[in-house]
Structure formats: C-alpha cells, structure tokens
Image (cartoon, rainbow, N blue to C red):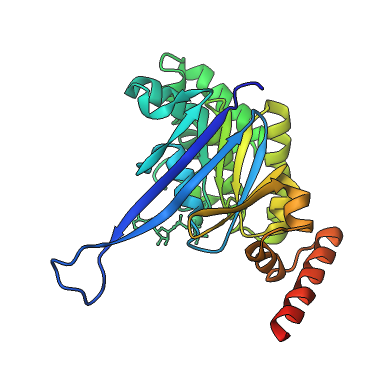
Length: 286
Ligand SMILES: Nc1ncnc2c1ncn2[C@@H]1O[C@H](COP(=O)(O)OP(=O)(O)OP(=O)(O)O)[C@@H](O)[C@H]1O
Ligand SMILES: [Mg+2]
C-alpha cells in the first residue's frame, strides 16, 4: 500500500483544569480531549469528523497542525514524523495543510483588504514571489471561489458571511495545499449558502486533488462530502467507516443516538435515522 498523506498514531491531547472549590494545592483535573486516535488519510480523500460538542474534534484538527502540542502519539505527513521536522520544514508543511474556520468574519483580519488576506500565506509559499504575480494569483482565486477580482480592495465587513467564507477558502488555496482542515466551515452560514460553499469545496477538491478533514454537526453535509466518517465521543474514536456504512448502518449505540437526534434531509439517510430512532425508543421503553 502507498504511504498515506497523513497518519495519526495513537495521539493523545491533555488539558489540565483546576477543580472548582478544591484546595489550591490540590492537583488539577486532567482532561483527555483527544484520547488514542489513530487514522490514515489518503491523498484527495475526505474524512468527515462528527461527535457532540466537546468531543475533541477541533482539538484533533489543531493537533494535526501542531498548533496543539501532543501528550503522546505521532503525526506522520507522507511518512515523516512532523514532530521531528526542523522549524523551516514545519513552516513549509504548514503551507500544505490549511485551516478553514467556522466563523468567516471573525477569522479574517478586519484591518486587511480581501486581497491582502488572501495573499498573506503566499509570503511563505513564494518567499521571492513577485508582487505582480501574487496579485494576479489573488485575482484569479477571487474569481475561482465565486467572487470578483474587482472586490480585491474591500474590507471583510463589506462582505456577507458566505462571501467571507469564500475569501477564507481562497486564502487557504493560495499556497496550493494538499490538505484542508475544515472546522465547521458552513455552520455559521444559512442553508442555501451552506450548499454553495460545500459544492465549491467539493469542486475545488476534485480539481486540485486536495484531501480534507471536515468537521461538522450537520450529518447530511458530512455524508455528502466525505468518503469516510469518524465518530468521536469524549476524545475517543467510537467508529470509523465509509459514510454510507456509518450513517445508514451505524454499529455503535453512540452513533445511533447521534443520528437519531438530528433530522437528515437525505431520503436514504433519513429512513435509516427514523428506523434508528424507533429502535431506540422501543429499547428505552422496554
Ligand atoms: N485550550 C483549552 N484548554 C483547556 N481545555 C480545552 C481547551 N480547548 C478545548 N478544551 C476542552 O477539550 C474538550 C474538547 O474541546 P474541542 O473544542 O476539541 O471540542 P469540539 O468537539 O470541537 O466541540 P464543538 O463541537 O463545540 O466545537 C472540551 O471539553 C473543551 O472544554
Ligand atoms: Mg470545535
């Protein structure tokens, strides 16, 4: 088998929380926000990540980029342990894995124009890139994400939420990444705009062969965009399998509950959800 683009081996992230009411000298409580996750992601593949709030999804994405230090475990990029990379190599790698965040407006610097925001990561990607080339690339990306090159000098507050998310995506694309880490990229958008942004991400992915880790609460979106889905609870992997398998025939009680708790606007998945809901209700009544 060829080397995966990304591999996580038994990674654990811990946080220490002081316990309310405890003596000052009492040891802090340890929270395992990510608890022994292992997975592989191939080039161009999308893995959806679902789980209730606080299950460790965002922490997992941050651990992949080394923004969040690991307590234990290893992260491999094309077979190389990223914790052994020199700062210079790590900086190069960061250009290859880009984040797309939940709150489009808050994630853009309000003092920079759309053009400056999109161009910013290009400084590390093309340290000696000529200004004219970068400007041309920015204009091209603005058009590619469904905006207009004439918007290059506008500030974030002059765009709608959906347009801001398109700017965030263009910014993520300028360094020609191999992996997009999307942390609830459409949760803050209204439904019609959500579909447009999801379709844009899927088109770009096909066009450029980009892999994705895609976190979302909306199971229909996750099922639509992902080849495989990872279900997390309390930092642990509950199950991981093909999207159809996880959503239509979930194996684990936690996944069944998660699916039963949210309506899915997809006839096949919705049928499975209702069946799971009825089964759970019957089980609880027994
Ligand atoms: N910097 C931090 N310091 C301490 N605890 C943290 C920190 N970041 C996250 N946590 C805790 O780690 C756990 C996992 O948080 P995380 O943000 O990864 O969850 P999530 O699955 O992304 O949730 P949501 O769906 O609400 O975004 C939570 O219990 C959270 O309180
Ligand atoms: Mg989160």
